[in-house]
Length: 256
Picture 1 (cartoon, one colour):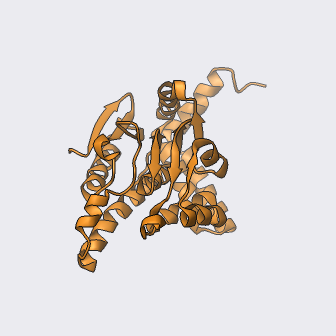
Picture 2 (tube, one colour; picture 1 turned 60 degrees about the horizontal axis):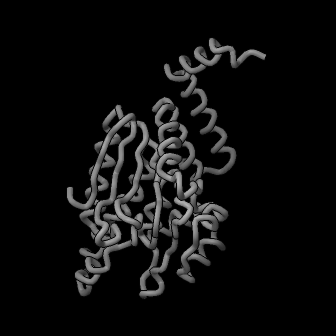
């Protein structure tokens, strides 16, 4: 792997974009390397939470324009394979059973902003910037819109993708594009505490919660409630739940 670095420690699997000279721009090889790393972390029982971060001042500037230029004039099959590599990555982040947390500092633009949006939780540096400027070069933020509309709603998504404007971390938080904005001076430590806290939760509970969270998208209210009941029952049968309840009661915190 030469587009990313991977690290594992204390229940946290880290995928680190490692092309600072290109502002961590995405190409097919980068997407494939990230997919490989995510698959390895999914299979590793020691990993409970996955983070996506980057070296250098920017999280990700989007697609590698030099790579896109090299495909000008290519046939539809080749163009589809290139587009699918990023689509597969976004789908994998959403569907794998472990929480994926984006740690965003600097600029997250176009596909880079989509990469952050694909994650379950986005922790933003106070100076981070987000945007979908594809229309300005005659392109379309196609795959990212699948996630963006679900995240911020139609009207907000339309304004972002049609104007292509860049927004700051505070506005991104206000519209629901990021989960939390962390102070610039303490970003690394604060992010580590959030991720470390996630890693302490039982894997069975994290996986069931994430699955239900996104599965509800395809269900109406009644069907969603039935699915929620089934998930509740399944969770009660896990060792993690039984141990957690007993530990909580033994601590005295459950007493009135």
